[in-house]
Length: 93
Image (cartoon, rainbow, N blue to C red; front, side, top):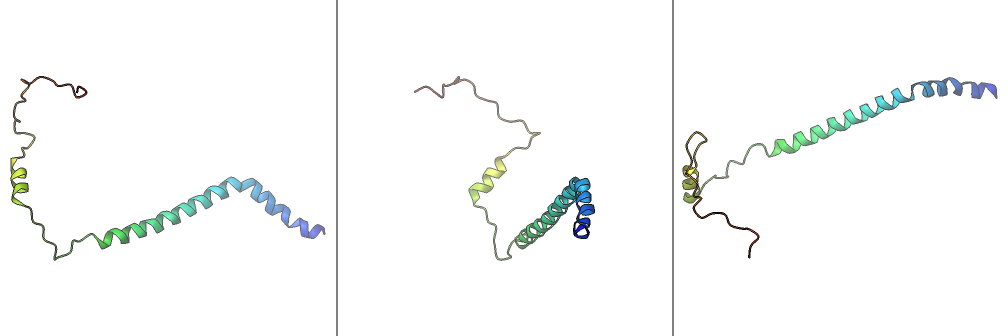
C-alpha cells in the first residue's frame, strides 16, 4: 500500500509549490488562444465588407452639394454673432 501512495506525494508537492505559476501560465495560454480566435473572426467579418459593391452609385442631391460648398475652413473668418436679441430663458414658459 505504501507504493501506491508513495507516487502521489511528489506530484502533490510539485503542485503545492508551483500552483500559482501553473495557474498563471494556463490562464495566459487560454487568453492568447481566445484572442487569436477572435482576431480571426473579426478579420474575416471585416474583410467581406471592405470593398463596396461595384453596382452601388454614390449620388448626392443638389441641396447637399450646396450645403457642403457653404462650409468654411478653420482659417476663414466666421460670420459675427448677433447678440442684439439678448438671452432667452430656456426654462420659461
